[in-house]
Length: 385
Ligand SMILES: *Cc1c(COP(=O)(O)O)cnc(C)c1O
Image: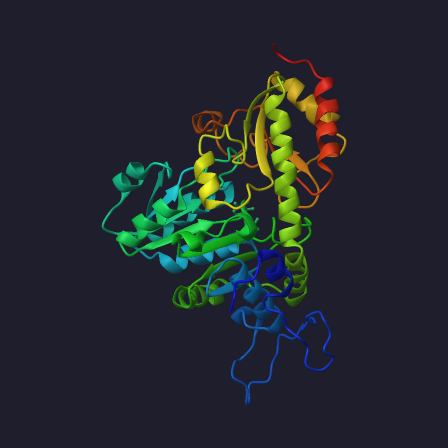
C-alpha cells in the first residue's frame, strides 16, 4: 500500500469502526474485566491490550514507522520499562550526558541498585561513544533535539555503532515528535515519547509510548506488565483525539518557532538563539538531513542581568511562565530554576546552561502576536550594551 502523508495518518491510521453503531469515533471501553472463553486474547488494562489501548498504539506505530507500539501512563513509565527490559545485572549502558532531568535522575538512582553500570557521553562525538564502549555494553540511549540547548544527535551514526555490536539504540523522540523526525528510518531500534508533551498537545494528559519491532516489544511487554504503568481507556481516547491534529499542531508550532527565532536572532537585545532551523545552528546540515521540520522548542539568552531576565518574564502577556512543553499555548521557563534546578551551578555551567537561559515551547497562536509580546516585554527592561 502506498504510504500516506503524516497528516492523513494522524486522522485515519489505526482507525476503529464500532461494529454496532458505525460511529466515526472509537467508543471508550472502560471495562477492566473481559470474557475469556472463545476469545483470542485475554484483555486486561495492565496487559496493554484493551480496545482503546490497541487503537491508539496502532496509530502511533504507523506515525513512527515502527512495527508496533505500546502506550503507558507516563513518559517515565515508558523509559523505565525500556531500560529495565533491555538491561540486567552486570550490563553496561551508554547515555547522552545532557538528557531530560527525570531520565538522568532515574539512571543515577536506580541503575546501581540493580548492578547495572553506565557512562554519560558527549553523544555527538563518535569517539566519545567508542571510548566508553565495553564488552558488556547493551544499549545506547539518546535524545534529539536536546533540552534546553537544542543540540542534535546524528541518529545514523548512533544506530550504526549499535548495529555493529548487535545492541539496541534507543531514542527519546519527545522534542521532535513523529511529525518532524522518525528515528526508526535512520536505523534506530526503539523510540520513546513522553506523550504528555506534543502527542497530547493540550497540557491536559499524562502518558508515554514505546515504538519498536515486534521482537523487542515482546521484551518490553514482559517488563511493562510487572511495572504496571498502564494507561486507562479515557486517557487513551483523549490521546487518540489529540493525535488527529498532531500534524496540524506541530507544523504550526514549528513554523511559529522558526519565525520567532529569526526575530530573536536579529534582535540586538538577544545574546544567543538555539534553534535547529536557523542556518546559524552549528548542526543545521544534520537538522536538514534527519528532521522534516525543526519543532516548536527553542532557547535563548538575553543581553541583560538576571533581575532583568525575571522582569522580562513578568512583562510577557501571552507567554505563560510554566513547566513542561508541547502544548497549544506558548510557554516559557528558566531551565536553571525548573528542569535543571537539581544540577549544581557548576554542572549547569559545564553543560552550557546559563542561569539567564530561557526555554520556550511555542504554541499555535499567531506568530505576529507572539513576536509582539516578546517585543513589548523586551522594551521594558534594562539591557547590557
Ligand atoms: C517530559 C519528558 C519526559 C518524561 O515524561 P513524563 O510524561 O513526564 O513522565 C521524558 N523525556 C523528555 C524529553 C521529556 O520532555
